[in-house]
Amino acid sequence: MSSKEQIGLLSPFFQPIPAYEEPAQELNLDLVIVTPKRIDWKTYQVRGLVYTGETWDVCDVPLPLSLYNRYYGPKPRIVNRIETIIGKNKIFNHVTRFDKWMIHQLLERTALKSHLPKTSLYTPQRLLDYLQRFKRVILKSTHGQLGARIFLLVVDAKTVHLHQGTLSPVASFESEQELLDHLEPRIGPDFLVQQFIPLASIEGRIFDVRLLLQKNHQSEWEVSGALSRLALRHSYVTNACHSILFGEEALRMAFPQRDLIHELRKISIKAASIVEGALGSLGELSVDFGLDPAGNVWIIELNAKPMKHMFADLGDPDLTAKIYRQPLVYARHLARSK
Image 1 (cartoon, rainbow, N blue to C red):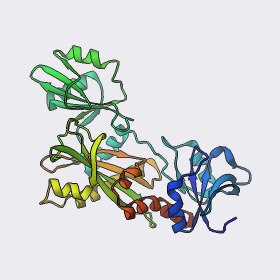
Image 2 (image 1 turned 90 degrees about the vertical axis):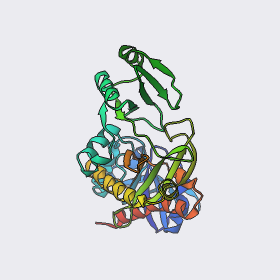
Image 3 (image 1 turned 135 degrees about the vertical axis):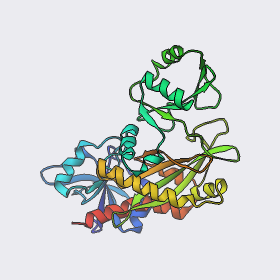
Image 4 (image 1 turned 90 degrees about the horizontal axis):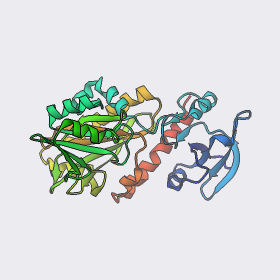
């Protein structure tokens, strides 16, 4: 068996994760896929799937001294049990799916409040209040993914238009009760009602900016990369996008007289620190920003398990290598720390 340092990848699946092979070789690490049912709790050994630089082999090895949590969802119960053996906070990414309402409440109690759209848990009356106040309102699930179940409501005189993904309404309502009756089977208490933020555009396409944050070898948050999604022309959301640009490039195109990327970096690092302080050990997340036509910065949401392949789509091999290497760098730091 190899004598190299071992880093664990805690996973529900006993299968290789090829994206981390090259950075593991570069850092001279062995990777161990750890699944809970293969842990021997008496000997603190695990029958793991081990990558030593050439192949993935099934081997019995000691529990690695740190692990990168690859489960998707709330903190798995296995994390606490393993940390009684290897030490507290030696597993990072305790949570890999954020509750949007919880995150909003955490940030709202801080200086970042001014960057948050007005948001509340959904009730029929609250929706009507928001429509009267803002005229354009977003409805979205607290656990929605990939832009699913994001509705836009627009007040036009005495009519309310309902949009689902496109700027063309899918339904219109002449009365409040008609609207609420239509929404009742589709919208529940797990939805948020939110002030709509009109986004700045590039060549007629709205855009957002996503910053990927990862911990470094000193347990500090760093921005590893920034990208921008340009929406389809008929869409009010960027999830199904026309193209992806470097975040800095998009900001220069839309606001050539301002250095906005510096501001986004500071806000995102502050947000990451706040969320980690409340939810437990994290090692990476992303922050999605919207900028309105005046250049005001709005936090749209935080993602606990960033889609790294989106950054790979930028075609920068150095950036791609960095974003897959950094979790292993941080895991190695945790393994070495007392």
